[in-house]
Image (tube, rainbow, N blue to C red; front, side, top):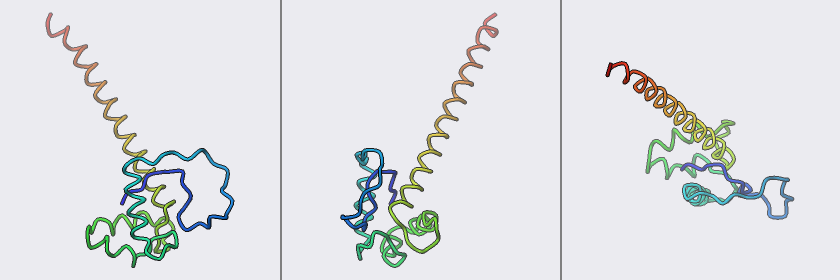
Length: 123
């Protein structure tokens, strides 16, 4: 139930509400589309948020989702909104990117050390 950052309005927002000025909508990735699908399935009363009661079905399917729910409920109100899910997904995406960059830097450093050591070993 991961929902990454998408520039779509939050579900449950009245259609007649003026949309705030924002960047053009980005096409959701496959993962985001799947997350939106899950969000819409779990939001049974269509209020634009998922309550703990609505999410209980998902908790039974995967207990890890209960932990995700707690982590993603940023304001601790017992509901998940698409914005909260986007925020958590964006944080996780940024952390994965930082990890990749650290690994690449470590690999480059290790490669440079081994290349500089190689000529000395052949002497």
